[in-house]
Image (cartoon, rainbow, N blue to C red):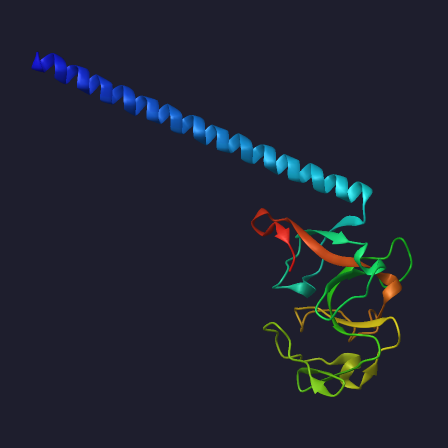
Length: 202
């Protein structure tokens, strides 16, 4: 009797273990399916936003924003935001340097605002005569370019810099210069890829 009872108990334990394993497998499969459906849903939603609203996608082609953003990363740009307001200091914007449809898109950070005076001296940025205390660890600027002398921004003009301060073509150089609001496409809004960085841009 005891041997039969032991066999029954062992058999019951095996059945429970098998059942638990099957249940875990089903749970893992379910989670995988739900995650897959969620990713597809998110992709579709954003595709619709791009198609019917004020958003467009852009891929970073330059190293000017490293290490904050790297070449090849993709983003959604909010094209509507500056139709109802103006860029703020620290905004990362997408802009062109001319009205041409073929003009390249650039991504830089807004530093100087309309009416302000910008100067770069001893590796630091000065706005209206005061050192600009940036919220970030940026290298001292070795080439002040045009900002070696004070630059006063006109109405609707913005002074931009790349986060990669010593390897960035920006408002310090004549090919870019001050950015007119009419050439600003929008604000960097959402990281699309790589997957490890997907999310809204703060």
